[in-house]
Image 1 (cartoon, one colour):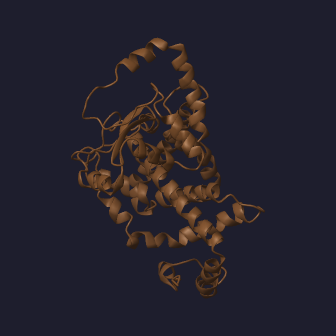
Image 2 (cartoon, rainbow, N blue to C red):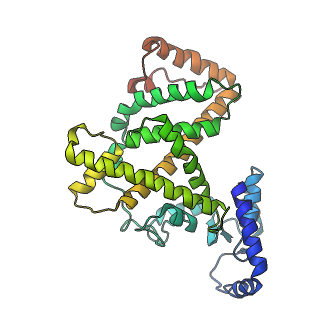
Image 3 (cartoon, helix red, strand yellow):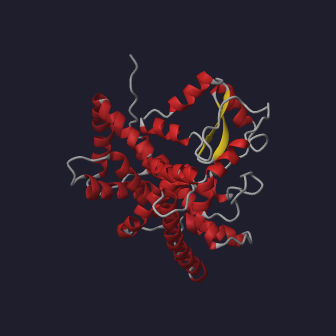
Length: 350
């Protein structure tokens, strides 16, 4: 959360130097009686500082609960990261959101995300199904029948990763290491890039880019947003080169080209006559890397956390499941799809 504080210093300085602008912004408070109760906080900054402090203290839900108690348990208004918004709470709020998708509610990208991702087709637009459809082959590519071919690859990368980054250390910080593993896995599965040196080269700029996604969009030297823009330019350049080379491979020797997600994307676009720029394809993959990167690493981290907190479960998982599978495989064998269903440990309830 340090990125919030560095950016907020610039915002506070900006507010002090431009009091006239602040007064103008303050004078534009809406008197619409249909708005939910609450406050938008400071001009420009909104309530981002309070939310950042709650997150820094490891209790982000306090920000929401305090406002639910003060204003309304159903809905309240606030302003975070340059955007005025309504926070809809509780079961009824969830039902409203999920039952009105693309009707009363549309997807929205935070301003810094659209700038950093450089997605021309959705920049400054809301995301509705008519102008941002998921490619038809995506569900097929991500189905279990397709993913089972990558089980051995995942196992191989995990073994290499543990050997290189985990085993030599006396103490391991799981979440950063899990993020590095998920990044390596994504590059291998999505684009067939197996060179660890190349992944290491991309990994650090990618972390800077993801931090900038949730920053205040102030393009001044030293801000998280400014660093993320530079990282985005570098990553886009690398991905555009990968896309260019893959297009040539598919045109000249389609049968021997890797049959990964990138090849599926380019082939499907060609077959459907859909003309997309390399930048749009590059941005789609950056977004895909972003969403898979954090979800995968978070799941890995929580699994290891709970195994460490419940040693009895860890011992049973290790002895009952993992050791038996390892004996069947031998030292050089890799996991197969069937192994993921073998001897599932069920924790007994007492």
